[in-house]
Length: 76
Ligand SMILES: [Zn+2]
Image 1 (tube, rainbow, N blue to C red):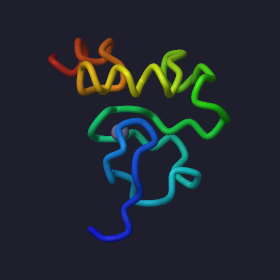
Image 2 (tube, protein in one colour):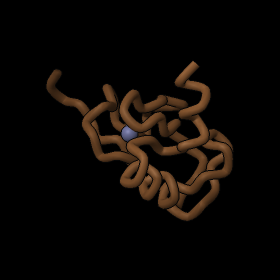
Image 3 (tube, protein in one colour):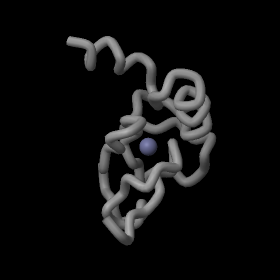
Image 4 (cartoon, protein in one colour):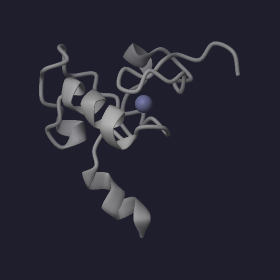
């Protein structure tokens, strides 16, 4: 389990490769989908239903998931 990289959203070491090489990787902890096409933390991410990384981090702190809208799908 060595050499894991930290998720840009939740900060957990869930990435098997560096985030800049993890195209469309979805973090198993916070469900943030790695978006290589946003360049700042305030840029809406198409991969994440227009959430910004900053919003996703806030959601993770509050709800334990990057996008609480996903909870409804996961409960099924
Ligand atoms: Zn994460």
